[in-house]
View 1 (cartoon, rainbow, N blue to C red):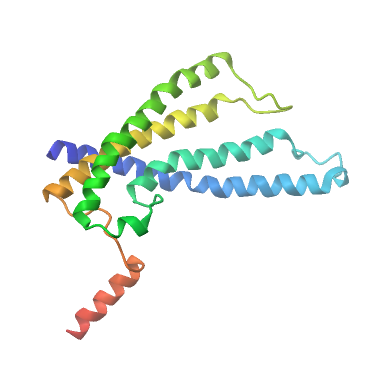
View 2: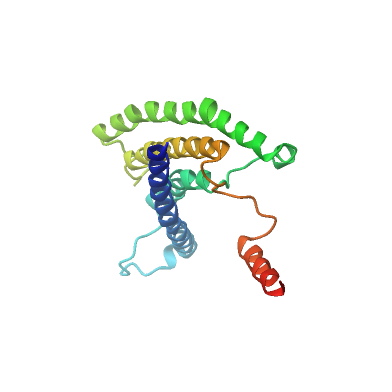
Length: 202
């Protein structure tokens, strides 16, 4: 079990690093979107001698690529942080241990098979696009295989994180580790401040 927990920590560290780094692509996407909108608004009012890219389909597609990359590569980190969408009205009715068993069951029998299937299907899909040098059908469009590679890479990371979550959930149920993502009634920083204040009063 120690080896599996070590593997889980390695997966968590990789996905945490990637998740935090790709978040900066949101800023890049916003800047590209703003630039594209401004250039389209100005239109023919721009002097022809200015050596700047004009609005084009390639800029629009770049926005889609950037947003898609963030969504796909950060999804594993979202799962790790337990920030994915839940039906809290239902899950809050169960005890912590029951929720842990439900998580373990769903990760093993639903999440892991699904993400593994997507990885298996997306590899030849990406490979064909890469070998053929597939390009967007839009005028001045971008090459497509990098976007398809992001699908493959995102689901590989999500598969790895699913394995990590299974290991951690089993270890929590066995009492081998503490809950990695404890639930908070308020922001963790606020809870820490209250705890420090209570210790001072004691």
